[in-house]
Length: 444
Image (cartoon, rainbow, N blue to C red; front, top):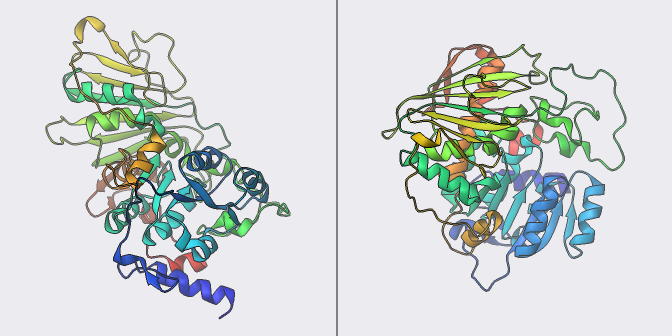
Protein backbone atom coordinates (compact mmCIF):
# COMPACT_ATOMS: atom_id res chain seq x y z
CA UNK A 1 0.00 0.00 0.00
CA UNK A 2 1.10 3.57 -0.56
CA UNK A 3 1.58 5.87 2.41
CA UNK A 4 -1.79 7.67 2.21
CA UNK A 5 -3.78 4.44 1.77
CA UNK A 6 -1.93 2.82 4.63
CA UNK A 7 -2.68 5.75 6.94
CA UNK A 8 -6.36 5.79 5.90
CA UNK A 9 -6.70 2.15 6.93
CA UNK A 10 -4.84 2.87 10.13
CA UNK A 11 -7.25 5.69 10.94
CA UNK A 12 -10.23 3.39 10.41
CA UNK A 13 -8.70 0.89 12.80
CA UNK A 14 -7.97 3.65 15.32
CA UNK A 15 -11.66 4.55 15.35
CA UNK A 16 -12.60 1.07 16.54
CA UNK A 17 -12.17 1.84 20.23
CA UNK A 18 -13.69 -1.36 21.56
CA UNK A 19 -11.78 -3.53 19.08
CA UNK A 20 -8.39 -2.09 19.91
CA UNK A 21 -5.63 -0.82 17.64
CA UNK A 22 -3.09 -3.21 16.19
CA UNK A 23 0.51 -2.07 16.20
CA UNK A 24 3.48 -4.26 15.36
CA UNK A 25 1.28 -7.35 15.50
CA UNK A 26 -0.26 -6.83 18.94
CA UNK A 27 -3.54 -5.35 20.15
CA UNK A 28 -3.64 -2.69 22.84
CA UNK A 29 -7.24 -3.48 23.76
CA UNK A 30 -6.06 -6.42 25.85
CA UNK A 31 -4.51 -4.11 28.44
CA UNK A 32 -5.46 -0.50 27.69
CA UNK A 33 -4.00 2.13 29.95
CA UNK A 34 -1.55 -0.25 31.61
CA UNK A 35 0.16 1.65 34.46
CA UNK A 36 3.87 2.30 34.19
CA UNK A 37 5.82 0.96 37.16
CA UNK A 38 7.42 3.38 39.58
CA UNK A 39 10.88 2.41 38.32
CA UNK A 40 10.06 2.59 34.63
CA UNK A 41 10.72 5.70 32.56
CA UNK A 42 7.60 7.23 31.01
CA UNK A 43 7.96 7.85 27.28
CA UNK A 44 6.10 10.96 26.15
CA UNK A 45 4.97 12.26 22.78
CA UNK A 46 4.19 15.96 22.59
CA UNK A 47 1.67 17.29 20.06
CA UNK A 48 2.32 21.02 19.90
CA UNK A 49 5.66 22.27 21.22
CA UNK A 50 5.31 26.04 20.76
CA UNK A 51 3.40 28.40 23.06
CA UNK A 52 1.92 26.43 25.96
CA UNK A 53 3.33 23.33 24.32
CA UNK A 54 6.81 24.55 25.20
CA UNK A 55 6.14 24.33 28.96
CA UNK A 56 4.08 21.13 28.64
CA UNK A 57 6.88 19.39 26.75
CA UNK A 58 9.41 20.74 29.26
CA UNK A 59 7.32 19.19 32.07
CA UNK A 60 7.27 15.91 30.15
CA UNK A 61 11.05 16.02 29.83
CA UNK A 62 11.41 16.54 33.58
CA UNK A 63 9.14 13.58 34.36
CA UNK A 64 10.36 11.10 31.78
CA UNK A 65 11.72 10.95 28.24
CA UNK A 66 10.27 12.80 25.26
CA UNK A 67 10.57 10.37 22.36
CA UNK A 68 8.42 12.19 19.76
CA UNK A 69 7.53 15.81 19.06
CA UNK A 70 4.93 17.11 16.64
CA UNK A 71 4.09 20.59 15.40
CA UNK A 72 2.81 22.16 12.18
CA UNK A 73 5.41 24.94 12.55
CA UNK A 74 8.91 23.82 11.60
CA UNK A 75 10.44 26.61 13.67
CA UNK A 76 8.78 25.25 16.81
CA UNK A 77 10.08 21.78 16.00
CA UNK A 78 13.58 23.08 15.42
CA UNK A 79 13.63 24.80 18.82
CA UNK A 80 12.19 21.75 20.55
CA UNK A 81 14.77 19.50 18.89
CA UNK A 82 17.45 21.46 20.66
CA UNK A 83 15.87 20.44 23.97
CA UNK A 84 14.93 16.88 23.01
CA UNK A 85 17.77 15.74 20.81
CA UNK A 86 16.67 12.09 20.61
CA UNK A 87 13.00 12.80 19.88
CA UNK A 88 11.70 11.97 16.43
CA UNK A 89 10.03 14.92 14.67
CA UNK A 90 6.61 14.96 12.98
CA UNK A 91 4.31 17.50 11.35
CA UNK A 92 1.19 15.30 11.59
CA UNK A 93 0.19 13.58 14.84
CA UNK A 94 -1.43 10.78 12.84
CA UNK A 95 1.93 9.89 11.29
CA UNK A 96 3.48 10.11 14.74
CA UNK A 97 1.08 7.60 16.29
CA UNK A 98 1.34 5.36 13.24
CA UNK A 99 5.13 5.18 13.36
CA UNK A 100 5.80 5.52 17.09
CA UNK A 101 2.73 3.98 18.71
CA UNK A 102 4.55 1.07 20.32
CA UNK A 103 7.20 3.39 21.83
CA UNK A 104 4.86 5.95 23.46
CA UNK A 105 3.28 5.69 26.92
CA UNK A 106 1.66 9.11 27.18
CA UNK A 107 0.87 12.14 25.04
CA UNK A 108 0.50 15.87 25.70
CA UNK A 109 -1.84 17.81 23.39
CA UNK A 110 -1.07 21.54 23.33
CA UNK A 111 -2.63 22.73 20.07
CA UNK A 112 -5.40 25.07 18.94
CA UNK A 113 -8.75 23.99 20.40
CA UNK A 114 -10.11 22.33 17.27
CA UNK A 115 -7.28 19.76 17.25
CA UNK A 116 -7.60 18.72 20.91
CA UNK A 117 -10.18 15.96 20.58
CA UNK A 118 -8.99 14.30 17.39
CA UNK A 119 -5.41 14.03 18.66
CA UNK A 120 -6.33 13.03 22.22
CA UNK A 121 -8.93 10.44 21.23
CA UNK A 122 -6.58 8.84 18.73
CA UNK A 123 -3.93 8.53 21.43
CA UNK A 124 -6.33 7.26 24.11
CA UNK A 125 -7.83 4.64 21.79
CA UNK A 126 -4.29 3.32 21.38
CA UNK A 127 -3.99 3.05 25.17
CA UNK A 128 -1.95 6.23 25.64
CA UNK A 129 -2.34 8.31 28.78
CA UNK A 130 -3.26 11.86 27.86
CA UNK A 131 -2.87 15.45 29.06
CA UNK A 132 -4.77 17.98 26.96
CA UNK A 133 -4.70 21.74 27.33
CA UNK A 134 -7.79 23.73 28.25
CA UNK A 135 -10.49 23.88 27.13
CA UNK A 136 -10.53 20.11 26.83
CA UNK A 137 -12.36 20.23 23.49
CA UNK A 138 -13.78 22.44 20.77
CA UNK A 139 -17.37 21.22 21.22
CA UNK A 140 -19.62 19.79 23.92
CA UNK A 141 -19.87 16.49 22.07
CA UNK A 142 -16.09 16.19 21.90
CA UNK A 143 -15.72 16.89 25.64
CA UNK A 144 -18.18 14.15 26.54
CA UNK A 145 -16.62 11.74 24.06
CA UNK A 146 -13.15 12.34 25.46
CA UNK A 147 -14.40 11.52 28.96
CA UNK A 148 -16.11 8.36 27.69
CA UNK A 149 -13.04 7.16 25.81
CA UNK A 150 -10.82 7.83 28.82
CA UNK A 151 -13.15 5.71 30.95
CA UNK A 152 -13.38 2.89 28.41
CA UNK A 153 -9.63 2.73 27.82
CA UNK A 154 -8.74 3.14 31.50
CA UNK A 155 -6.05 5.71 30.78
CA UNK A 156 -4.70 8.38 33.12
CA UNK A 157 -5.83 11.83 31.98
CA UNK A 158 -5.58 15.48 32.92
CA UNK A 159 -6.64 18.84 31.50
CA UNK A 160 -4.13 21.68 31.66
CA UNK A 161 -5.94 23.91 34.14
CA UNK A 162 -3.05 24.04 36.58
CA UNK A 163 -4.85 26.07 39.23
CA UNK A 164 -6.67 22.88 40.19
CA UNK A 165 -3.51 21.84 42.03
CA UNK A 166 -3.31 25.05 44.10
CA UNK A 167 -3.86 24.43 47.82
CA UNK A 168 -5.65 27.73 48.45
CA UNK A 169 -8.01 27.06 45.57
CA UNK A 170 -8.82 23.62 46.98
CA UNK A 171 -9.22 25.01 50.50
CA UNK A 172 -11.55 27.84 49.46
CA UNK A 173 -13.67 25.45 47.42
CA UNK A 174 -13.92 23.05 50.37
CA UNK A 175 -14.88 25.89 52.74
CA UNK A 176 -17.67 27.06 50.43
CA UNK A 177 -18.87 23.47 50.05
CA UNK A 178 -18.83 23.20 53.87
CA UNK A 179 -21.12 26.25 54.18
CA UNK A 180 -18.80 29.25 54.67
CA UNK A 181 -21.13 31.46 52.59
CA UNK A 182 -24.35 29.68 53.48
CA UNK A 183 -26.71 29.21 50.56
CA UNK A 184 -25.04 30.48 47.38
CA UNK A 185 -27.33 32.29 44.93
CA UNK A 186 -24.99 33.80 42.34
CA UNK A 187 -21.58 33.36 40.79
CA UNK A 188 -19.93 36.10 38.71
CA UNK A 189 -16.82 35.45 36.62
CA UNK A 190 -15.03 37.91 34.32
CA UNK A 191 -11.89 38.07 32.20
CA UNK A 192 -9.65 40.55 30.41
CA UNK A 193 -10.01 38.45 27.23
CA UNK A 194 -10.18 38.71 24.31
CA UNK A 195 -6.69 40.04 23.68
CA UNK A 196 -6.96 39.05 20.02
CA UNK A 197 -9.30 40.38 17.27
CA UNK A 198 -12.97 39.37 17.43
CA UNK A 199 -16.05 40.76 15.72
CA UNK A 200 -14.18 41.04 12.41
CA UNK A 201 -14.78 39.74 8.89
CA UNK A 202 -12.93 36.89 7.23
CA UNK A 203 -9.99 38.29 5.25
CA UNK A 204 -10.59 38.22 1.49
CA UNK A 205 -7.02 38.26 0.28
CA UNK A 206 -5.15 35.02 -0.33
CA UNK A 207 -1.58 35.03 0.97
CA UNK A 208 1.17 32.46 0.42
CA UNK A 209 1.66 29.95 3.21
CA UNK A 210 4.94 30.59 5.03
CA UNK A 211 7.50 27.92 4.19
CA UNK A 212 7.78 26.83 7.81
CA UNK A 213 4.01 26.25 8.25
CA UNK A 214 2.23 23.01 7.33
CA UNK A 215 -1.11 24.66 6.69
CA UNK A 216 -3.22 21.56 6.08
CA UNK A 217 -2.10 20.27 9.48
CA UNK A 218 -3.21 23.50 11.13
CA UNK A 219 -6.65 23.26 9.48
CA UNK A 220 -7.01 19.69 10.67
CA UNK A 221 -10.70 18.68 10.93
CA UNK A 222 -11.98 22.25 10.34
CA UNK A 223 -13.37 23.42 6.98
CA UNK A 224 -10.49 24.36 4.72
CA UNK A 225 -9.66 28.03 4.13
CA UNK A 226 -6.61 29.80 2.69
CA UNK A 227 -3.77 30.79 4.98
CA UNK A 228 -3.79 34.18 6.66
CA UNK A 229 -1.87 35.49 9.69
CA UNK A 230 -5.26 36.40 11.20
CA UNK A 231 -5.49 32.68 12.08
CA UNK A 232 -2.02 31.39 12.78
CA UNK A 233 0.04 31.36 14.95
CA UNK A 234 -1.96 33.16 17.71
CA UNK A 235 -5.20 34.77 16.59
CA UNK A 236 -7.10 31.54 15.97
CA UNK A 237 -8.88 31.78 19.35
CA UNK A 238 -11.38 34.33 18.06
CA UNK A 239 -12.61 32.23 15.10
CA UNK A 240 -15.51 29.81 15.48
CA UNK A 241 -13.80 27.18 13.30
CA UNK A 242 -10.63 27.04 15.40
CA UNK A 243 -11.17 28.52 18.86
CA UNK A 244 -13.79 28.84 21.57
CA UNK A 245 -13.52 32.58 22.22
CA UNK A 246 -12.74 34.30 25.50
CA UNK A 247 -15.09 31.92 27.33
CA UNK A 248 -13.26 28.81 26.19
CA UNK A 249 -9.85 30.33 26.72
CA UNK A 250 -10.23 31.38 30.34
CA UNK A 251 -13.35 29.97 32.03
CA UNK A 252 -11.69 26.59 32.72
CA UNK A 253 -9.22 28.62 34.81
CA UNK A 254 -11.16 31.50 36.33
CA UNK A 255 -14.38 29.57 36.99
CA UNK A 256 -12.56 26.53 38.31
CA UNK A 257 -12.84 27.33 42.03
CA UNK A 258 -16.60 27.83 41.78
CA UNK A 259 -16.99 24.66 39.75
CA UNK A 260 -15.19 22.64 42.40
CA UNK A 261 -17.07 24.27 45.26
CA UNK A 262 -20.58 24.20 43.82
CA UNK A 263 -20.69 21.25 41.42
CA UNK A 264 -21.60 23.42 38.46
CA UNK A 265 -22.69 20.57 36.21
CA UNK A 266 -25.61 20.35 33.76
CA UNK A 267 -27.19 23.82 33.63
CA UNK A 268 -30.74 23.74 32.31
CA UNK A 269 -30.54 26.94 30.23
CA UNK A 270 -28.17 29.60 28.95
CA UNK A 271 -28.70 33.06 27.48
CA UNK A 272 -26.33 35.74 26.26
CA UNK A 273 -26.17 39.46 25.62
CA UNK A 274 -23.81 40.34 22.76
CA UNK A 275 -23.52 42.88 19.93
CA UNK A 276 -24.05 39.97 17.53
CA UNK A 277 -21.63 38.07 15.33
CA UNK A 278 -21.13 37.14 11.69
CA UNK A 279 -20.64 33.41 12.06
CA UNK A 280 -16.90 33.81 11.53
CA UNK A 281 -15.59 35.31 14.77
CA UNK A 282 -16.94 35.55 18.29
CA UNK A 283 -18.46 38.87 19.36
CA UNK A 284 -16.17 41.53 20.80
CA UNK A 285 -17.91 41.24 24.17
CA UNK A 286 -20.40 38.93 25.85
CA UNK A 287 -22.40 38.52 29.03
CA UNK A 288 -23.58 34.92 29.42
CA UNK A 289 -26.13 33.73 31.97
CA UNK A 290 -26.26 30.07 33.08
CA UNK A 291 -29.22 28.68 35.05
CA UNK A 292 -28.38 25.78 37.37
CA UNK A 293 -31.03 23.70 39.15
CA UNK A 294 -30.71 22.24 42.65
CA UNK A 295 -28.05 19.54 42.76
CA UNK A 296 -27.19 17.17 45.61
CA UNK A 297 -28.51 19.62 48.22
CA UNK A 298 -26.95 22.70 46.62
CA UNK A 299 -29.63 25.33 45.96
CA UNK A 300 -30.43 26.56 42.44
CA UNK A 301 -28.14 29.40 41.37
CA UNK A 302 -27.20 31.71 38.51
CA UNK A 303 -23.73 31.98 36.98
CA UNK A 304 -22.91 35.08 34.94
CA UNK A 305 -19.84 35.28 32.70
CA UNK A 306 -18.41 38.58 31.38
CA UNK A 307 -15.75 39.29 28.75
CA UNK A 308 -14.65 42.03 26.37
CA UNK A 309 -14.57 44.67 29.11
CA UNK A 310 -17.92 43.78 30.70
CA UNK A 311 -17.97 43.52 34.50
CA UNK A 312 -20.39 42.86 37.38
CA UNK A 313 -22.16 45.94 38.71
CA UNK A 314 -20.55 48.27 41.24
CA UNK A 315 -23.22 47.20 43.73
CA UNK A 316 -22.18 43.56 43.45
CA UNK A 317 -18.52 44.49 43.81
CA UNK A 318 -19.10 46.70 46.85
CA UNK A 319 -16.36 46.10 49.41
CA UNK A 320 -13.91 44.73 46.84
CA UNK A 321 -10.75 46.81 46.74
CA UNK A 322 -8.84 47.20 43.48
CA UNK A 323 -11.09 45.10 41.28
CA UNK A 324 -8.93 43.02 38.97
CA UNK A 325 -9.28 42.70 35.20
CA UNK A 326 -10.12 39.03 35.69
CA UNK A 327 -11.87 37.66 38.74
CA UNK A 328 -14.46 35.51 40.46
CA UNK A 329 -17.19 36.56 42.88
CA UNK A 330 -19.36 34.02 44.72
CA UNK A 331 -22.40 35.47 46.52
CA UNK A 332 -24.04 33.67 49.43
CA UNK A 333 -26.47 34.49 52.21
CA UNK A 334 -23.62 35.11 54.69
CA UNK A 335 -21.37 37.14 52.41
CA UNK A 336 -19.12 36.92 49.39
CA UNK A 337 -15.86 35.36 48.32
CA UNK A 338 -13.74 37.28 45.82
CA UNK A 339 -10.72 35.88 43.97
CA UNK A 340 -8.58 38.26 41.95
CA UNK A 341 -6.55 35.41 40.51
CA UNK A 342 -7.34 33.34 37.41
CA UNK A 343 -6.19 30.23 39.24
CA UNK A 344 -8.01 30.70 42.55
CA UNK A 345 -4.77 31.27 44.46
CA UNK A 346 -6.20 34.34 46.27
CA UNK A 347 -9.42 34.51 48.26
CA UNK A 348 -10.97 37.50 50.03
CA UNK A 349 -14.03 36.89 52.23
CA UNK A 350 -16.49 39.78 52.61
CA UNK A 351 -17.51 40.89 55.14
CA UNK A 352 -15.05 39.06 57.36
CA UNK A 353 -17.20 39.72 60.45
CA UNK A 354 -20.04 37.61 59.02
CA UNK A 355 -18.02 34.65 57.82
CA UNK A 356 -16.73 31.89 60.05
CA UNK A 357 -14.45 29.81 57.88
CA UNK A 358 -14.84 26.10 58.72
CA UNK A 359 -11.84 23.87 59.27
CA UNK A 360 -11.45 21.65 56.23
CA UNK A 361 -9.02 19.00 55.14
CA UNK A 362 -7.59 19.10 51.64
CA UNK A 363 -5.23 16.85 49.78
CA UNK A 364 -2.15 18.80 48.81
CA UNK A 365 -0.97 18.32 45.27
CA UNK A 366 2.58 17.25 44.42
CA UNK A 367 2.24 19.56 41.41
CA UNK A 368 -0.20 19.64 38.55
CA UNK A 369 1.82 17.69 35.98
CA UNK A 370 3.20 15.38 38.68
CA UNK A 371 -0.37 14.39 39.63
CA UNK A 372 -0.85 13.09 36.12
CA UNK A 373 2.45 11.20 36.04
CA UNK A 374 1.70 9.59 39.40
CA UNK A 375 -1.64 8.45 37.96
CA UNK A 376 0.21 7.00 34.96
CA UNK A 377 2.31 5.02 37.45
CA UNK A 378 -0.83 3.54 39.00
CA UNK A 379 -1.62 6.16 41.65
CA UNK A 380 -4.85 8.05 42.22
CA UNK A 381 -6.37 9.86 39.22
CA UNK A 382 -5.34 13.48 38.78
CA UNK A 383 -8.05 15.80 40.13
CA UNK A 384 -8.65 17.37 36.71
CA UNK A 385 -9.05 14.02 34.96
CA UNK A 386 -11.31 13.85 31.91
CA UNK A 387 -13.91 11.48 33.37
CA UNK A 388 -14.81 13.03 36.72
CA UNK A 389 -13.79 16.65 36.40
CA UNK A 390 -12.48 18.33 33.27
CA UNK A 391 -14.94 16.69 30.88
CA UNK A 392 -17.97 17.99 32.83
CA UNK A 393 -16.25 21.36 33.45
CA UNK A 394 -15.60 21.83 29.73
CA UNK A 395 -19.18 20.86 28.86
CA UNK A 396 -20.48 23.54 31.23
CA UNK A 397 -18.11 26.18 29.88
CA UNK A 398 -18.77 25.53 26.19
CA UNK A 399 -22.53 25.44 26.67
CA UNK A 400 -22.41 29.23 26.95
CA UNK A 401 -21.35 29.47 23.32
CA UNK A 402 -24.70 27.99 22.23
CA UNK A 403 -26.36 31.15 23.52
CA UNK A 404 -23.66 33.33 21.97
CA UNK A 405 -24.24 31.68 18.57
CA UNK A 406 -28.03 31.81 18.66
CA UNK A 407 -28.57 35.13 20.43
CA UNK A 408 -31.54 33.52 22.19
CA UNK A 409 -32.17 31.69 25.44
CA UNK A 410 -31.39 28.02 24.94
CA UNK A 411 -32.80 25.28 27.14
CA UNK A 412 -30.44 22.34 27.52
CA UNK A 413 -31.12 18.60 27.79
CA UNK A 414 -27.77 17.53 29.25
CA UNK A 415 -28.46 13.80 29.25
CA UNK A 416 -29.10 13.73 25.51
CA UNK A 417 -26.92 16.74 24.63
CA UNK A 418 -29.82 18.44 22.87
CA UNK A 419 -30.59 22.18 22.80
CA UNK A 420 -34.21 23.26 22.93
CA UNK A 421 -34.90 26.70 21.62
CA UNK A 422 -32.50 28.96 19.77
CA UNK A 423 -31.60 28.66 16.10
CA UNK A 424 -31.86 25.38 14.21
CA UNK A 425 -28.16 25.26 13.38
CA UNK A 426 -27.12 24.87 17.04
CA UNK A 427 -26.49 21.19 16.41
CA UNK A 428 -23.30 22.06 14.55
CA UNK A 429 -22.04 23.93 17.61
CA UNK A 430 -22.82 20.96 19.87
CA UNK A 431 -21.14 18.56 17.44
CA UNK A 432 -18.83 19.77 14.69
CA UNK A 433 -18.60 18.20 11.27
CA UNK A 434 -15.09 17.07 10.34
CA UNK A 435 -13.55 17.22 6.89
CA UNK A 436 -11.99 14.56 4.63
CA UNK A 437 -9.79 11.99 6.41
CA UNK A 438 -10.87 13.24 9.82
CA UNK A 439 -14.51 12.52 9.02
CA UNK A 440 -13.61 9.10 7.64
CA UNK A 441 -11.16 7.99 10.28
CA UNK A 442 -12.60 9.07 13.62
CA UNK A 443 -15.64 7.79 15.49
CA UNK A 444 -16.05 10.86 17.70
